[in-house]
Amino acid sequence: MENIYSKKQYYFVGFTSLIVSVLGLILSISTFNIIKNSLGFISDERKYVGLYWLFKPMTLFIGVTKNAFDVWEVFLLSLLLVGSIIFLLKKRDTRLIAFVFSIILISNAQGMFNTLFYFLYTKKKIEAETGSGMGIMMYFYPVVEALYIVISYKILTIIKSKKVLNITHTETSTVIKDTPKIQRFFHFLIDTFIILLVFCPLVFNLFEAYLIKISFFREKLNNEFGALLLIVIVRFIYYPFFEILFGSTPAKFLTESRVISNTAEKPSVSDIFKRTLYRNIPFNAVSFFWKTGLHDSLSYTHVVKEKRNGFKTGYLLIVLAVFIPYVYFYYFGEKIITDYRTSKIDERMIKYESDFRRSSVENINPNQVYILKRLGSMLYEGKALKIERIEGNEIICKELIKKDTYDLNYYGLVDLYKNQKDTATVYRFTKKDFINAVPKNIREMDEEKRNGTNFFDQYGTYEIKDIYTLNAPFIEEGKIEQEYSMKNRSNVQRISFKNIGKSGRIVSIKTADGKVIWKDKFPIMMKGSNTYSDWFSVHVDNLKAEDTFSADMEVADSLNNRQMYKIEMDQAPYTAIRIYRLN
Image (cartoon, rainbow, N blue to C red; front, top):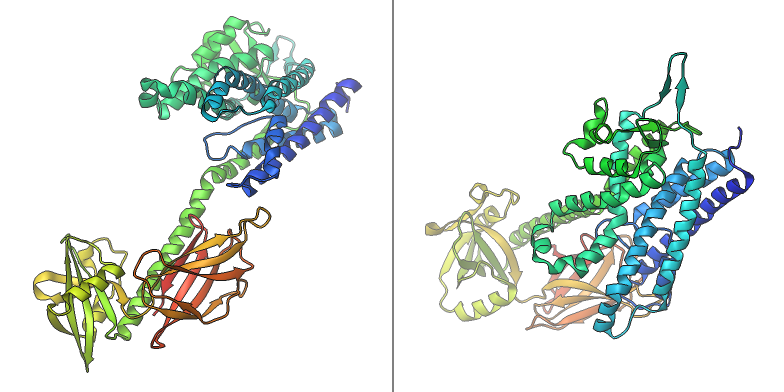
């Protein structure tokens, strides 16, 4: 295949693209790893983040949560790497190179403005608030940005100089091939998204510095309309910048298209600004599905194809379309996974609680207090049944009542029983009454359709909301405690538990897969608690903060009555130790 580039141009375009792509990938991934691994800590590695960020070829992000490592930077730099390899092997196809370098060009041009904004405003603000600036590193940013601008402009100029229009000559006419309508639609999507990616950093800085102080912007434009207005304004920079310099935007570089006038020449500057103005006409974005687009016809311009020098554009757009599900998952996948994991945790919690209530009723004893919930009622009153004794099939209980509350917890019950045990009303029930009060369809939102027991004739039906054993330990929650050293900061040193019940001991803890090592010698004594702040710890090994595990804990009270707990560590929606009672 004939090489349309000189040897000097071939080496400059090919190897510069290869070096920039590899350097950018290394810097983006390294920056992400350092920030991720040192989050919340001052590490030796973190001092290199500023240096890495300085030499990154582009800075792209949408929103405020993923700016340390954005998939778009890595994706585009990967395209540049693939494009450079294709060009070095084939010596012709430059679409991927031109596409990515056009984004590097506009990103660094925007970065220059951002840097200027820093020196004019942000620098003074930071020095006033902290007493110091951001260091000498900021003075090198315009130098590096200028270098990337020069390199990008030079490469795009070389590539554009070798492009010719796709012209077909017949005996009666000369026809320039129009860009297909589906490719025009991709132009709109890709260019709009690049506008958001490139200009988000600048808009955030402007909004934080100036616009947030103006009530109109703060109250009226902090919504979808504000985002739309942003796109309209930035279009007057983006489209004229590319179409005046090169006749093509990044998306048009990708499909080998360019803007021409009615006479098949380079459009005038006024024609380009007219095109940009007419882009904001409602429904213009889909108007090119007809004979010609509104912004084309009104500005007397056309979008036409250049002669193809490589694989078909349709194949490339199919590859990009396949990337759409990944992009969706990048921005929404974390929430989808978290919601799924959370739903599974909720299912397990309901199962454990249901099993616990059934087991407790089957083994009903005089140490228990049953918290009741009146179904279909908003009565502002807490009600419970304290089991006093069991006589054959009859269960003798005392009714405990607390006014002005919807909830009764362990602490409240202990005090409530002390105050009311001598005056409480005594009731006799059967075991079947308690079995019928165990919730069987807890997901039914209409409480009147749920099962229950009419414990008190005049008050309607009740279900068992919770069960406490007053003379036993009650482990309510747990938390992990990590090492303080930077080297091992993700290692978990111990797990602390809160016992809000009576004194007792942990007999054993057994992890389901045996991975987590419990270092302390069992049994482990637990003190009784009268406060919310008493914790005890169990030391562990081979456990990291990002891990998950499931374990069974056996606890004994002072009379050697045994209780079983399920301990689970999970990561949805955050790292947590969850405690479930099993009997």
